[in-house]
Image (cartoon, rainbow, N blue to C red; front, side, top):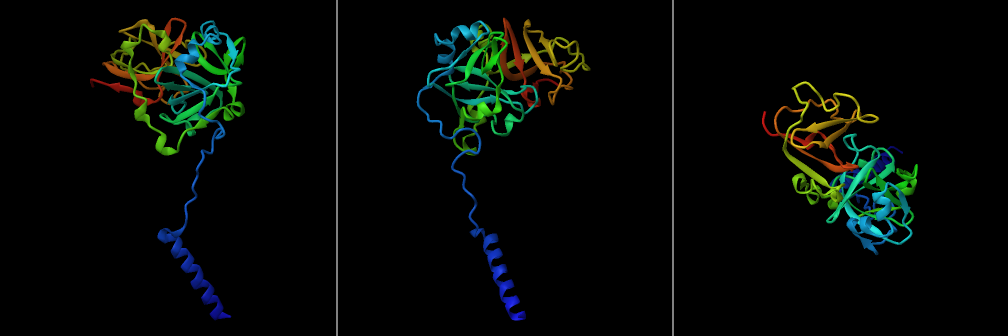
Length: 276
């Protein structure tokens, strides 16, 4: 009996050694564990084409909503998500023609929609519209556009490729100065170069002053006055960041509300201090 015990123990050690030597096959995932992998890549239109299509242009510009009845899809990359807590239950999608906000009633979107991740959005059955002139994809809300449920969203997007296709370098920001007078570009990733916070005194934070709406606070820049604000949620990870008193580069999603640009910083590193 003791001899049999030693034989079994030796066999077990042999199996374990084989596994440690790399003979154990790692599981291979050929499809993303999120979204709807059955979505095909047919009938792709650009974000600019969606915004200007006769069926939807009025909904975007008049803060209404319109159901997409046609089999059309968007293909783009995620340029901003909720990783820093400032884009709440939404993310920014961008292609070579423009950007748009996708509103989803779900937290932790950054867990599967990383910056640079390429996706396809199946628009058929979803709603498009405007919120303060900002183009969004979502669901009807008070006559306009709001967040779709996470279950609906899960059936309408497909992740393209694996981790090798997450390419932050593919979503380089545009110089904001080149699009400041063109609000049709709202939704894209931009950098405001060498700008100065108007209220900075070495102590005030991004959420100093009165809230501009809900839990959001607005800070102006000396270079743009009331035309441009840096919009920060009190729940953002960087909310308590002291505004630099020197020049800085600010990167973020250039959204709009009516005729005002609202820059949504994504994370702390989006503020680059130029002079210390």
